[in-house]
Length: 98
Image (cartoon, rainbow, N blue to C red):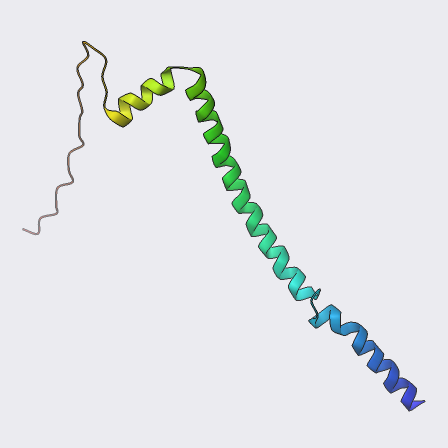
């Protein structure tokens, strides 16, 4: 009877080993689940970025206003008979210790 008990406990341990320590163990599944959640967050951020880029491409393809805006602000271009005025913010005055 005692031998049967030891054999059954041994079989139970052999059955439980993959569940706790094997390749498909609970800890590995938990780590993979955490990795998956992190990757989904990264993918969501990239999806938003891609949607913004797609909207910008559509705007550039369909109208001249986006091209004009890029030329004005990015390259500093002006139309004929226009005057370009740029106002720079005042630099922060250093704190004086007097």
